[in-house]
Length: 221
Ligand code: CO
Image 1 (tube, rainbow, N blue to C red):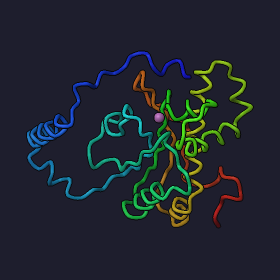
Image 2: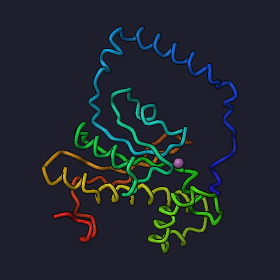
Image 3: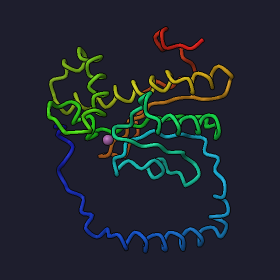
Image 4: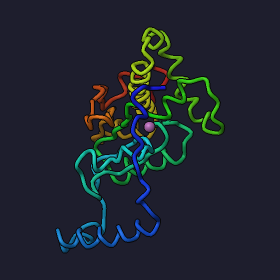
């Protein structure tokens, strides 16, 4: 287990089903107070960014980038993965690139990711093991580097980073992204890791707008 993960349990007992609907009323009131045209302006969307992030409740795309509704198109799953047989992810990516014409796709992981911690262990969790298998495959590819890191927390942090980097490459391997590049559509892919304990986003510096870094077999001509 990553040492950082659980120390304080965030008390959410005050969150009730009815409270969410009451919260919605407050949201509408505040939004209209700040801008009477708030909802009119959101009649259409033109987000420049697609975010592929973890489903973790502590990593909401808009809040941590100080952006608003309408500004980031979002897809989230367990451990922010780009799996080429995942129809949900592919549909989001296709729509974002070919209809919305986003200029950036960002894979955002986070330290202390429960999915990565689980994948690093030898415990069986059930159905989710099939999803986490993709992270175990990443571990295998980077086994030499990872096994050298004796501290389990640090090893987990590095696997979080490698998982982001590999999933950026997975994006580059899709025909959707490669076709955009082939036709000269401006599109950059990026990898970030967010720290829940500090709020800081670290750029993994794997940003690219071409398929140069891919093994030859993945390049569509
Ligand atoms: Co996570």
